[in-house]
Image 1 (cartoon, rainbow, N blue to C red):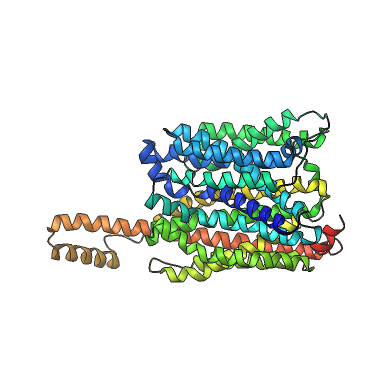
Image 2: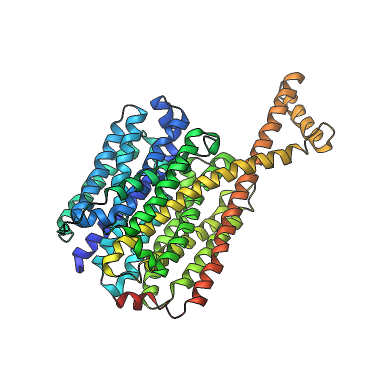
Length: 519
């Protein structure tokens, strides 16, 4: 536990490290087209720049507690910052796509380790009675990082070169490593001679890695139509099944799944998965919608996300204090899911004529809803754990959020593609030569083109193309609206789950402040 200046230097360092790690989960998305052209690679291959980072993140997060204990938390944290920073530099220096993919994987290993270790360090920095505040502060990084990634990425791509997406991490990483070395409490590696769970590490890496590849690449390669997706699905199912059995039976597991005996942690993990699903899916769907349908640039899209993000950042510390005062976290969680559902419902009502001002209110609901979920779920997840189990509980909870995001993006992408096929069929069924509205619109296109100097035959061809373009835009508009409505329904469906936990477990659901103090 720290006090005064030293305490807040640690807080600033930890939050900065968390933000740059999560920024890198989304900052690359807006520069894929530019990278593809500069590196002479296809868009499908260039997408591995995103995939490799996500795979590394999800593999390393559940292992962070074990590695921090084995190496020493301070040493492991500083080493992760250095690895992230060096890998960022090498990403910028890469001369071809597969070099970049490899260094992004190492960047993901370093970055993923920062996430859970940062949370554990924050909980140690604050006294027990202020852990609600610590959760609020930690949530700032989780909220801000993914949201400002597209803004920063769009600005850099528009004004500099794509390499600067990675170079900006270098001075930040160097400063974070230096401050961590100076101000973090010394920590000693574990002195016991227990055997390293190499089998658990291998099963985790292969199982989670295979699952992540399936989720990231499934839609691109038509899921089970691709042989490698089938093979990886079998490998993932076998490895993860054996992993659960092995980790519950081995004496010194790399992932201590026994902490899931805490009902609070288990329920929190499920809701955190849903949170990740909605949080990352919304950041995925909204930029697609605003850029492809409304016609905004990447930077304009990112700036629209900022007001909600800033609002969430402003209220997060206060939410932590409310939890400390004894407010039951379930009440905040219910409001958070409700606000997130409202965001999806309002977005599903927009159309091709919708202006940027319309998005302000629903995006505010999204930002505030995310804060109302992240802060109490982060605090609730570890509230019943012994101090020695908090790092493992935090790691598992963070993994569930990242996995929820991976599942969310994969499934929402597939859902949009399936709905696009259905919506196109529905729209085309109304466009026939005998349809009066179609004839009127076609004739209007033709007359306008002829009036501007086009001959009749060319005007007909251009009118058909214009009609097809209208159908495509309307098809994807309806598909994105369906996706937003799905997110709304998913968030609303979680509210009864929270209500059940309040009703069924009144004796155990003591205020977070009291529960933590007992330890």
